[in-house]
Length: 317
Image (cartoon, rainbow, N blue to C red; front, top):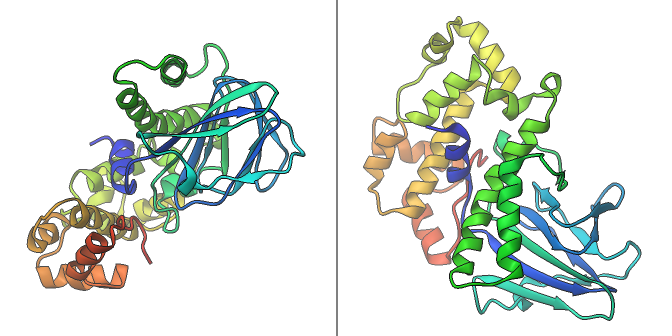
């Protein structure tokens, strides 16, 4: 099991929302905070991003900005403009790719703006370890796989062809993985810590892989440490230092996130979910699930189905 891919699969709670923004200067667009992670790709033209804190960030064609908590921010042609609010309900959703147009007499900028549905209120270390804003500028020769995906995305927006909507949707899905890969690759080795370090740590990575491969196994601190050749105490210290929480806490949180996804995505019986997530009985599973999420699994499944809600993810307490 690829730990990063598996983590993203479980933590994502829906398909990304994608909007093409055509803006002619003068313009400024204010984005409110969202429950998820936001992103922008500059397809053509130039603009500035005004983060909630810090200095304006100048963006040019091919640049990518990723906001891991979906923080409120403003995009504009030049700083100092009076912004208008981005209102999702007003976006033209007649196709899977929404459309926003801002008219003006000045230079034209095209952006791909969107959001990934991720439960940021109960963050997994994968996202909590990231900076608030990641800027990946379009530098020739740097991050070739990411650049290739962005180039394809820009090409689809420059010249729509049959199947463009499906291509764009697939590329946006891939973009999140490529952004994270590229960010990790940029970190100096001596500064690599947290989840970035965990993915390659010779002690922690095998334990994470074991948990993700088989969350239902009766793992103990000792059995996980054995995989790394460490004693129980030494492994527990190393895991908590790198990941930020004890190994059995991570295991429980991951089991609950996996259970939540199964409850939402499939009609899998509770007894099967209990077995898949390491509980000896449906009763034991239901008790643990209610303690974690605040409601028993059966009621949780009915609630999210009837309300059309997406499941909560990792670390629900």
